Image 1 (cartoon, rainbow, N blue to C red):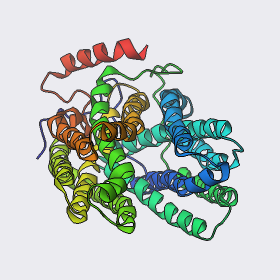
Image 2 (image 1 turned 90 degrees about the horizontal axis):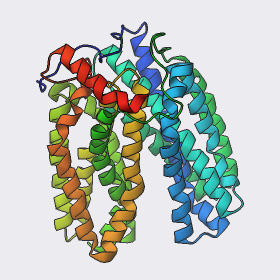
Image 3 (image 1 turned 180 degrees about the horizontal axis):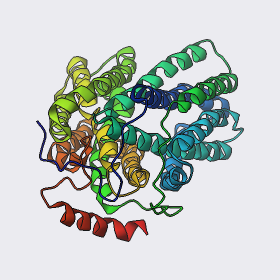
Length: 424
């Protein structure tokens, strides 16, 4: 049913014991993902308000919107130390609470420089909370013994969609974003506290060495990160450019073009919520290969489309195809070495960098050639998922860190040799 795997705990870590309250733990971590997604979904709906209030040009707004990704990339390597020191539950509660409060910052900025500074802090808190909750999710998944990461990321998408609906309503009512973001931040903060109390208190073993304050990722996580990079590149390109592609290439109306992102986001959220069942049946590697084939088909359909309908279908297939790849990348990273949050931070940094550069690369290629050529690159990266699926072999619940055909002793030595130069 799956590719060959060496079962057992990751080398260097004790075997994960059963959860005292498995249903409560799973529900709690799922709601944590939903709250995190709701913060981001709320913010994006009020970006036009920010642009109008500060009278920003498209270039100035683009500069400001790069800051959250930069902040996340800089702060993510700090998360491993935080999780190790305070434990998974306390780290998630603290970082998620700060992330909720950070939602208020952008609307308070009186100028572009301060907006950039506030968005840098906003992104830093987002990234650290992201690493902590994914590390907690991987631990819960391993102790449950079945795949749940795709569903957790589906809850993140669902939280963002629900929150964005309220944001759109607030914008339609011309509600001041300072008031809306402040109220939403308080509501989400109040939701986060009881949700986090249901998390299991997963702590590092006493003998585990604390990671450096600013921990570089293990080399073994970089290959996994590159798989996530391909998926997030396709996601970022489709999210930011699908509407433009439909309008400029296929001649779609403004209404149809505007609805393209919603359709893409809905298909991806639905696929993530349903993805765990497919992963359990097919295994992580086979599921990723099928996902790559579906996303590649979608990319080719977009490139060949000369009318809106096939292009929309192509974007929907891209969303379905990439949906489970990032959750599987985090699951695989969480089974590397003795400190899962450090490896997850490495994968997250590489993966989310793709979201930072994808829209710019698509735009540059479109300027030099055409949008059709740009999405040919997206199709090629989707095909790379099919070829590189073996890198996610560790994503099976119960799989060891060295999911290879080598004997355990040799695998342990190999893992230690790979991790040692980066983790000390």
